[in-house]
Length: 531
Image 1 (tube, rainbow, N blue to C red):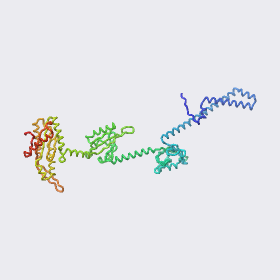
Image 2: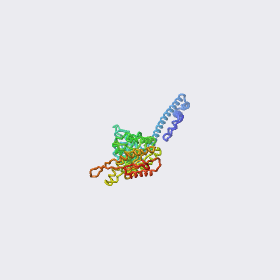
Image 3: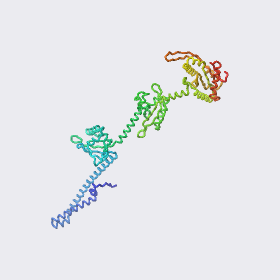
Image 4: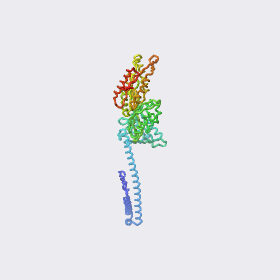
């Protein structure tokens, strides 16, 4: 069994002696002997010498009585020691509890107060005084002093809460600014409660704690400024900002979404993938799930399909937001409408590879398509054909009616050429009234390929020779129509594998076209072949 050791304080030294049972026995014996001697001395002084002699030789009864008196004294001493020991332990526990409370309040940067509501005087802890920058030995604090130290902007609210605490009897808390000894303002959180009333139920005493929350308020203000800063960016920027849950449902959409979706409130809780183009939807969904699972954001381009069928091109990047526990909470997606950029890129691409008047491939794209056709011929072993066309009697139309009318004719020629070939074939305009047609994958037999090329060439010749009805629009005047007949001269060459280069192949067809011109036009001529 372990022996409990208690701390001895100066206030408890006088009762330590009484805690030992052995010492109590000796104490009792001492009291008994003292009692015996005093009784004997009294007999010797006031009675006869025989009484004195008898006192020195006590009878059995006298000895018994004196021992009983000593025993009773021991019992009394023991009881007294128990009472004093219990009192001491109680005082020690109170002191230890007060010390622990003081340490906790100091560690929490808190100070306590005890306010006498009748006199207005307050007893406060040293930490309370240090909190507002005063010397604890010289600080005087009362109810009126406290009221005067509150910031003018906070005073009415603080006093209203204080009065509510008095009236209700319940615990109340408030936050306010208080002036320190240096004139600075610090934020204080006060919590108080009335703990004593008089017979008329009027409050007599209030206790509570004060906490310096200046640093917390500074952090809250900084956070509030950041929130306001980002809110202004989100609500006034051109970018589209969305907060999605881990299933891709919309939690928040900034006002920019209203420009393309209308009411943004109606978007809450809806599936964010539902408005994505079907061809892009699954790809974007997988990227979203990857971000949720790995925490790594991705950048992607996709298309929104609006309610009216309009397509909007978006560029987005997303990031995972985690909770304080490190768990996935939501995904923030910032998107930018790149529709105009895509259109501009398409326009640049069109200008680079397509004829702006007829939208047919130009010479640059023709060379790429011819390269692909030659490579395809090598793989399949089938012949292909290249047709070089030049319009007959086009210059007189331009000279008589102007370039605008000539452009109308070129546009119609382009449309008719498209209708004569397959989608896999290529029709290109390489300048002026010159067109080139690439027919791929004819036949592995040269004679059969020539026959197929003849059929296609004849079809083109007939289609282009039909009359053209051109509508001429002039500002401030009624539209007028013009009928014009225009034929073409066609030169044809076959190609297989890479027997000839692209340039050589085009020159062969061009040479054959001039042979057709020499025969009066409106005819087809094959390069180095007798048809």
